Image 1 (tube, one colour):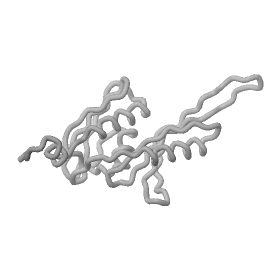
Image 2: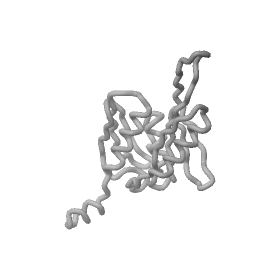
Image 3: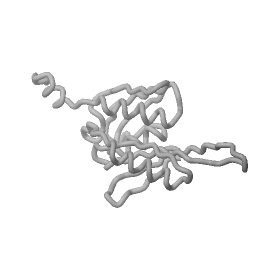
Image 4: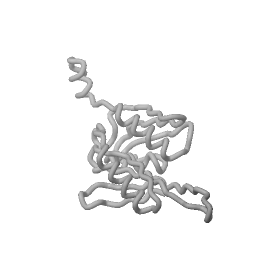
Length: 162
């Protein structure tokens, strides 16, 4: 259910999931909506947001605003990630494996949306434990935040890796 939009600032915006919640009141059911959105610039910055409102458009707007505010920097090397990494959130686990040129994004809908918004062109992924898109997005962000390039590791350790 991921839909892609390009915002005025050139960011890639994808709605991952819209949830409907029903509260039973005296006159019947009152519905509210929660939306999860991923926003990225397609060049190494990506963020996710979760917004709730009584209608769908305001909930998506709130989630987009939060996603734009809370973006993280992702290490992208030649259109893929620098090394294999595992991410987890709750029962969800995600394995991200770098891939060669021409492979494309091999991933489920939720993980694919995050990778494409971050600007990753070639990657292999596997999700384990749950198929809940919200949990998988959070696990993917956990994995992406742990990525380090070779230059980062050299600088942190104060040695030259060859």
